[in-house]
Amino acid sequence: MMVDKLNWAILQELQKDARASFSEIGRKVGLSSPAVAERVKKMEDAGVINSYKVNISHQKTGYQLRAVITLRAFTGRLKAFLETVSSFKEVLNCYRITGNENIIMEVILKDQVHLEKLIDQLITYGETRTHIILSKVVDDAPILPR
Image (cartoon, rainbow, N blue to C red; front, side):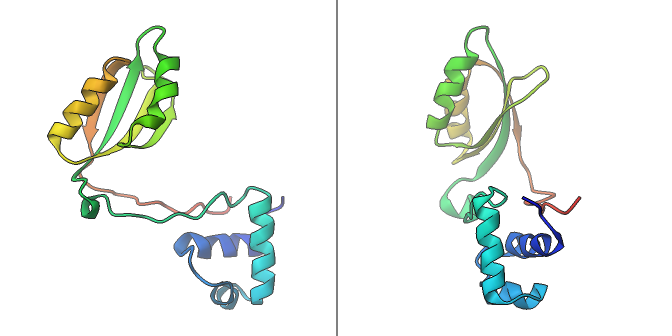
């Protein structure tokens, strides 16, 4: 699917506010509400738009720590980890990466005790390295046209 100038304008508006109405988006990009709806539907069908999500405050829901944990899997343990990682409720995002480590995860935790318990589970799969996130510098930056 071709993502033209108007589609990019619609995507920019949706990235700012995914709950914006088609008529509101249409006013901003110069299209009618039905035209916006049709373009959004086509982008959804083509997989350009994958989903719409709610951004929840981890702190206001009881998770006081946010961290990035890397894992260098022990020989023969990577497959077992990949099959298990989705069961860890603390893991927000998990990526298989290149380099010395195999995995990088973004996690949320109640406190340091919770972090210690998670690390105790992870070290059965490999060597971990933990980085506590102090603050976000860039927050869900929009994808821009090339």
